[in-house]
Image (cartoon, one colour):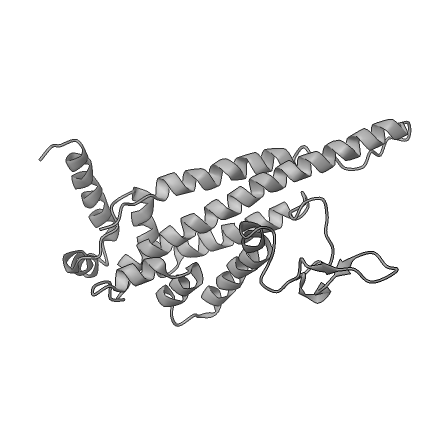
Length: 244
């Protein structure tokens, strides 16, 4: 068994998402007022840059928290799969990267699983991994070199993924909704896909089980899973209240 920490991890993700959302909403567009002074325009621009940076700090924490949550959900999905968990297989799975966990659970990757994998890989390669490792990626896209007579230029310009330029923050107010949509698509897919029952189990906060009896019960109650889940929740509540 593994402790179900869905609530704790989901709470961290939603905490930083709420704060990122609130901060990005304070990013002001360039003033359209004809009578705005240059000083007002400059002050507004500086304030917007600061809020965009603060938004990114929260967005980075949000993305990091989401990947932690997602890996935990993959462990829950494993318990509902036919994959072996004994003889050290569970320990190996826990030590794998999130990508290897994903490929193991959803093998073979059908088109929806492949698309969601690409969504997550894009977030990881563009935003999580570089800033989880000191602001550098594996492809050297953040490296610069000095060309005599010219300002420093990116060493691997074509590997700065989709946007070959740097802004004041890696995730701008305009890009933030796109980042959230990518994670929302994954959540919606998980909740309605082949492991929808596993996601319900995780939401219920019940311990993640890998014993043969549990898997036999899952097969037995494949047609009345909601009733089975309700019963398991009842007994879990009684146990937590020491009502044996």
